[in-house]
Amino acid sequence: MPDEKTGRLDEEFVVQMKGITKVYPNGVAANQGVDFNLRKGEIHALMGENGAGKSTLMKMLFGLEQPTSGEIWVNGEKLNLSSPSVAISHGIGMVHQHFMLVPSLTVAENMVLGMVPKKGLFIDHAKAVEITKEYAERFNLHVEPEAKVVDIPVGMKQKVEILKALVRGAKILILDEPTAVLTTQETTELFKELIHLKNQGYTIVFISHKLNEIMEITDRLTIMRGGRSMGVYNTCDVTKEEISRLMVGRDVILNVQKDEARPTDTVLRVRDLEYVNEWHKKVLDKVSFDVRKGEILGIA
Image (cartoon, rainbow, N blue to C red; front, top):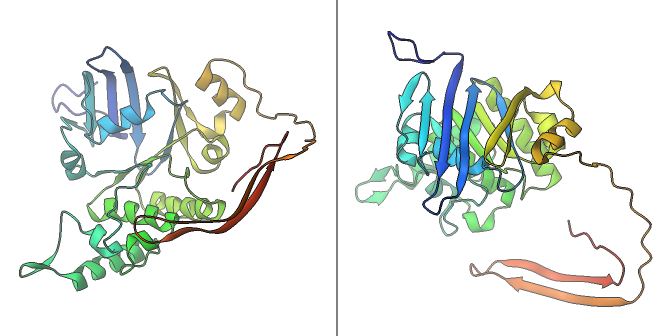
């Protein structure tokens, strides 16, 4: 509870969301009486099945949605986070699962959108590149400032999004399913970068349902189910089986025994498939594969 004299909450937490409820006009309750706390310098997992209310809760912390009831305190101050700009002004940044970059602009131009350094009436490109290089070096996030976003790999696009938040003063970073589109190598790089940020005192919310990653990278976790919090745990104190049970409300078999496949006839044959996207970039280049009856074909 707030101190009666100062009106401030316990300074152990940099974020306290108290009794957060979100009910939409159609009557759907996305969050129901949720408490969510963050400590400075931790990586905190927010877990749950699709539709559990994870993203909605974080959208309220970032000002994209407003709660029907409840309180949000940041650094001991009760706030009305009425928009993302208000959240950003209080040191909160969010990297969405679907990136919000402008493909036709360079990395540096994306970095300074909304805070554009100008030389007369024009964008000061040299200053934008300088800012990008400075922050990339400071936070150990390698990007190519003068490359167009359409031409860079997905992993680098994510780094640009993280740097955009840091350039705007974020001390609390919300990452929504950050590894969903990354390769194994890109995920490893991301984890190193997140630990580097954590060691500098940054607080990170890691929204995910990938148990192995949660066990590897996070300090604490909050589990949600059906719009409610099922509890907060130190990651080292719970097992993957316990987390799964709390997420879905029943025991989950994590190791599936699969019989050896006995595929027969080819039912789909693809040869030399090519695709050029709207930005005239070749996305597929002479891709060929067969799918046979009775098999599951993985594409990685």
